Length: 319
Image (tube, rainbow, N blue to C red; front, side, top):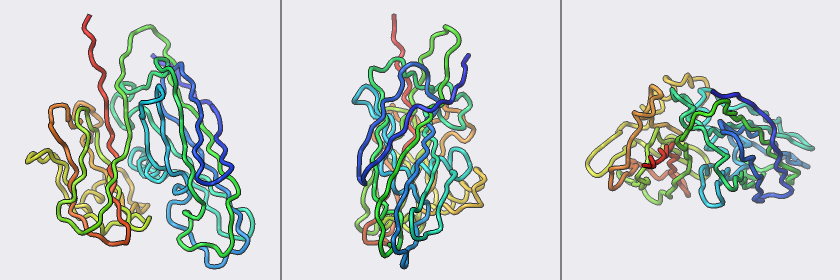
């Protein structure tokens, strides 16, 4: 039995570009999610031919990390990838404010959800994060450059400010029943595509459960649909998933009511469509696991990234 509270726990203020900053997170109750509100202000003196990339200002926040006990990274993801993770998880495009470029201060706002429970699972409480067991708990953010927001740079511009307001959605336990929840881990694996390949392989860690995998395909910093034509998840000759890229994306849109917004360059491979984590892909008995892509080089610098939704089930201690 829980009481649920949302409260503001702080704000991270960036005074320059490419700056890493941290915020100590409270250690007492159970974490459901963090709500991150990013604000970026750029000062344009001369607009010129300025034009924006899609999904701004998510490109500005290069890395979002949550680190427990100074060494265990539970979350490590870019803001752009988290934007699309939220799209898949909550079936709606995150709230943004995007200015019409003009002379003076131009302000972008983006709200993102960083979950600790597994969204759309039947028993989300099974993955509540018990912060009371930790000795340290840290949110670490790495800012980027405002120039990354523009597909065509304004004639004259300069960074003004950026900040991230942090809200915590926590669960306060109201009874004394013991709990030993699993941990929902979100990291990223990336490999550069240097040549067209029918079997472009990316090794995945083994040992835990996988609810699913978000796939990202980017050429010259732009998400694109023409890089990957087929996705496989396999271990040796055992194939757990195999489907054409476009079919996966179309199914994502159908299942998640995502037809109204384009999500080029991203697809989600789901192993728990009914939200039952018992259906997750169990890699504990596998010697290897890999994502394999039929991929075409389309830009000067192409990357394929995999964002696993990994569930770490706690060991049972025998008394």
